Image (cartoon, rainbow, N blue to C red; front, side):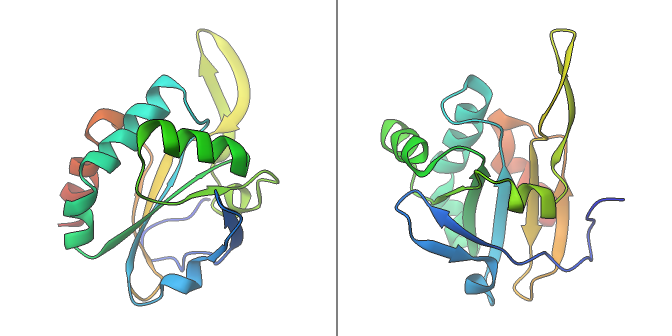
Length: 152
């Protein structure tokens, strides 16, 4: 029922915080960390982004490209990147096309309230476009360790 390790990662076309078009296929030959998060500048999303930022050099050294995806606008992403000095692009998926193709929109419960939203999920994609790992129980404060631990 959703994407799993071994599946071909769905290609997409989106725009980053600067309005530059980005396709997954642009990164063929590189390992990609494609992480989905609910909203810019919220506590848990900020913690996750800052963990990836703080370990960005390590991820680059291991050959990874980092792409964040949320339904926020390019302008919202610009503010989030600027406020937290994020070194990687954030894709504006305002129409939820990437979110839907990766199956990360679903029912969530917070403080007893049930609603539909982004299911915080990270896909580790190989150089040849195959999903190596799907991390659905994201530890935002230790996400880089989680990524490197599951793909080592």
